Image (cartoon, rainbow, N blue to C red):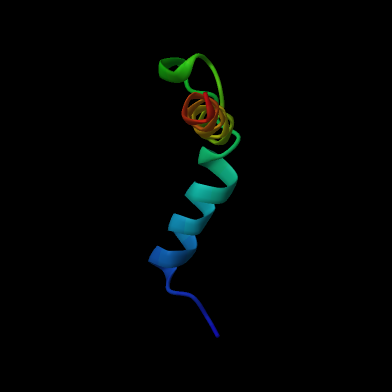
Length: 48
């Protein structure tokens, strides 16, 4: 029922901090947007 503090903190970092955070090492994109673009490009490359 209750989460451990470590689980709760890890979830907060992943969901509320990392997802919307822009990262200059990936072109000032969010990690989620970068990943979506990466897999879209991979699918497009494989389809060609």
